[in-house]
Image (cartoon, rainbow, N blue to C red):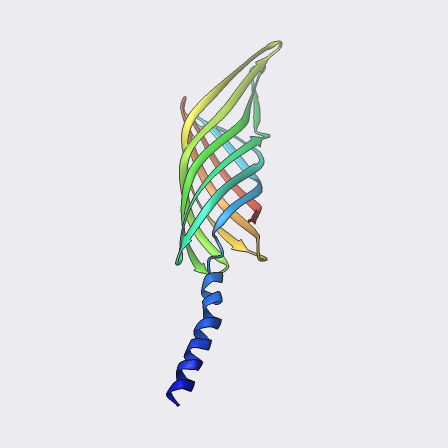
Length: 178
């Protein structure tokens, strides 16, 4: 009787071990396409447009806690003309980290933060001036696994740059984890 109980315990442990290993659903390298609403504000004057781009990163999961690093490049359609001068938000580079908690095996809540660099361009006739603005970004979001390696996310983020520029964005993304 004791041998059959030990054999049953060993068998159930062998079957359960792969299930525990599969709980790391947010671990590994990933790439994603992102797009959404972009609002650029300078000293109380703000304009909105569309943000689009891509990101790549790597996440490490320990239990329900997820640590990650990511990098991103986006563009924007946000523009404004003031007294004949056309001002537009250009590309935005980001590198940072995120910390998340898997509330279910398929759903991750996270916060993020890091360095951001935005390009702003002003044009008037044949004169064109661009400036790169350094700043920081903080944000929060939810990520949901749809299939084994495919996920979607919704995220809000705030960026603060030099020269009194701020940016608010709400975006959605679709990605693949390897």
